[in-house]
Structures are given as C-alpha cells and as structure tokens.
Length: 127
Image 1 (cartoon, rainbow, N blue to C red):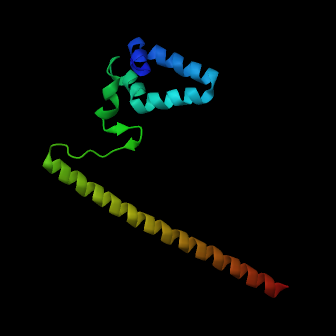
Image 2 (image 1 turned 135 degrees about the vertical axis):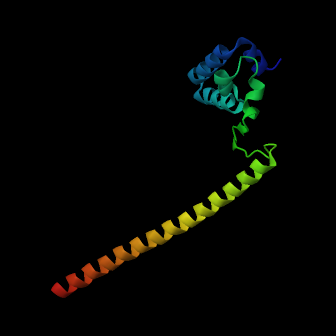
Image 3 (image 1 turned 180 degrees about the vertical axis):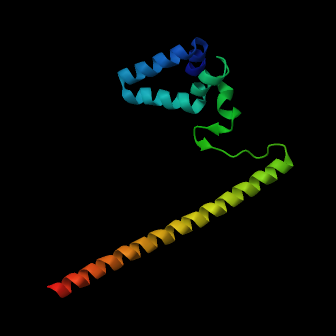
C-alpha cells in the first residue's frame, strides 16, 4: 500500500504531522510534503470535501497545481459563444489599454526630456 493511501486512512492529522516532521528533520522534505498536499488537492479537500475523497478534489473545479485550465464546454452553446466573445473582447481591450499606457509613458518621457533640455539650455546661458 503506497504511503499516501496509508496516510489518507489516518486523515489530515497524519499529513500535518508528516509535514511538520519533514520540516523538523530536513526542511526540503517538509516543503516537498507541502507541495504534494497542495498539488494533489488534499488541502482543498480538507475545506470542501469529506475525508477519503481527496483524489477528486483537484479536478472538480478545473484547477490543479500547474495553474488554471480553461474548460472546454459548459454544455450550453449560447453561453459558450457569449464567453468566447467576451474573452475576445476583453483581450482586445487589454491590448488597446497596454498601447495607451505605452503612449502615455512615451509622452511623459518626452516631456521630462524636454524639461531637462530646457533646464540645461537655461543653465548654460546663465553661466
């Protein structure tokens, strides 16, 4: 019987004890235990599900340790089309906003440079 299954039988107290013991003995072991608990969905399961159902916790909401993953289809074609169109529109607005910020930064840089040059010219004439 694998260690994870055996610890699952004892519950979250065993996992907590293993993690603490891992940090106490050699900190990378404790860190590895924490990462395993997070990636396997066991930590999420403690909050949302009953003990013994940890193997399904990571896949229920489409998220896993590697980051979020977009779901394919909700089963409702109209909603899926609306979602695709909204995401496309938001991505387009984000690109436009980033271009606006770039133009704003360029204008600010130019204004600061012009001010610097004006101060420099004014200082050179006075001397």
